[in-house]
Image (tube, rainbow, N blue to C red):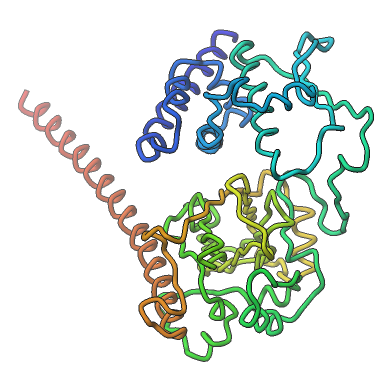
Length: 443
């Protein structure tokens, strides 16, 4: 049994390496530190640690490797040393390794009294944590670490304020965005404010489930959209946001963009971005959007459902003057609903309470900011090419239809290729049978 376990582990490690090289490194080699890629090919314990964290699910492990390696390059983890950390931060002893627990695991101490939310030093503190963890990982490859929080002499200055609200119950790092935590306002009122006020003066709002239903944009490429319908859609009032072009093809939803949400810089004013969900099942799919920075973003809609074959546009925008960070993440959760299930607010709330965890499909998106002076930014503005607002809206709708048609065409091509391969295989089998038949008759 031990031998079989070792063989299975070796197969998983080999498959992870091969697929990561083929599916990620080939297209994103510039996003990774070459030292990390080389270490992945040589260090079995390192690969096994990622597999263990994702319960030996290779697909999830590959996603984690992709996110982890991009973060490691962004933070220059391989180049962190004592000289790259401010000396005062090392001397105060706020974060350090010392001693062992009863199972001989190293203790990683964090003195909470030194935790102060200071934007000027937060990056250095994160680098200090990464420095200690990387140093330990290289010395004690694969060994666990016990984190100890020293709360002695901790005061109110070290506490991050949090206002509890029910529902929903926060059960992980991804939390409900702002649009479900504030006062309810009508969609017309909110949209008119957005037209008049700048993004820095946007007010905190909550969208009721009835209003979220009105936000759903169900696209059918074969049917033309009437002008009246276009004018009624809230999304037509959005002046500028990024157009997602890549698609992640999940079992329940096709999600666009596939990996990163692109926001404009503060100078460009193009802060909004768009997530497009397309239901590829024969049943209604419930979805909700969560984020690691719920106080920073507004999401409309953040909790709703999508009919079979329909598409839903989700608008994401930073709240007020807050800036987008590459460390922010979004989580899209989706689950298939029974045909008899209702889709009202009460039914959706009850559905998410009862749905089994293994029935929920999750997909994560990173945040990325594009500078306004880059020519390859894919945006639609009021004054772009001297086009009117209406022309921009029409162009956007045509682009969405084109993307949807392209997706369906890709699916048809894949099915055609599969049928061709099946036909060739059957033809070869028939030919072999005929040859063997003639051979047996004449021999």
